[in-house]
Image (tube, rainbow, N blue to C red; front, side):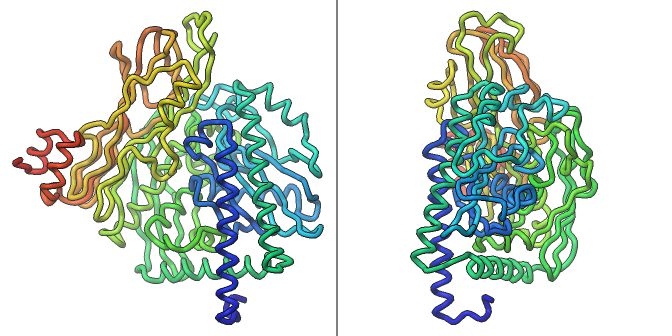
Length: 556
């Protein structure tokens, strides 16, 4: 037990723990560097981690998203239910993209690989990557059931004893629009787990370990204790918050009750809206992933993320609500709703620690899926180059305690913006405009992060489609503690009409579409903002002179 360790043992164990963290970070970097799709290679929409033979996460890579990492932490348990560790062999690889057994939608493939030392299973490596296409309608919110959203792979072997199952790969290849990219990403997922396993074996031989039992027990006990110590500093009780977001066919109410007890924190989403008829529903594992991350944003940030620290935060949502959507509802765009949950949770925590919580931000990604080809729109595509591309971008985050919000930065997902040059290389598109959006950040003592503006057109003048999965178009990010709201998003054609925030819509031949991404909410009274900071905002084009004078009281 951790409490029985000597001082020298503790030092040795900490070195081993740090080494384990370096192993999973190398695992993640292998995935990023070998990935075929821009979502993994450029945006970093991945996760990687190591688990003990009971399926408990011991370490995760810093590289990756909370939605993937925290949902994958639960997913490995489902793999072990289907294939117990004693049935696995060296060289086995298992795979799924089942939304309820993985990370929430079909575009995420999770791969789990057992690692053996001298013929004995010692742990499991798992990784997840968002692939560019899984067939069906394409990545977007228009589906009515998960069956329409693409191919669904149950938890099953992808390789046995080092021999790939070509049948599985063949089925995937003929069901997707980008078979080379998708298959390449599957090989990348396998490769990163393989490297992780090799590095783990090297580490264990170096430290003369025959299993991870003692180290894993230490990691989980210390991490859980660390989280409980942080929670013990908070006043006990229940704190409530609600947030209205755009939804698809109607607005959605996200309602949370956060309860602090001696045994951790419970977050309950009772009162939240029911499921949608469209693909914005959220499986429970994804809800748990982002709600627990919301707590960890301001409490216990120095405690490593693993089964111990995650277990101190318990998240529930009523079955049939949009945050605990049952199979087989459509879930492709579950991130649009799920990534709002940290803001909801932070609204609860603001009642406990009002000077330590950021304002609301854009939160949901602005990641349009752009498609061109015969039959994609009502117009004849002729000899145009067919394509399907998912590009990642972000609005502004909410202002932070003591700091402005981050500009054009993805939070809470943490993925990176996809470079324009990459988009234009892999698809017949031109990005005519990509710049900060003036006056989009909410006013405050600390200003909300600035959104961005992108104008996109087909380089061959053809009509193409955009699968829109945007929120904060009708309901902008709210400021906190006297700060102003951010500016809402907008999607507009050059020819005039605005797009809806969600659903597949057509950019006619010769036309262009401009996406205006929201800014984050402000924090605190705008009149108290440092006037030198206001002058700098005006100089850099973040804030107009009109807003600086009228809202901030600037006289420069």
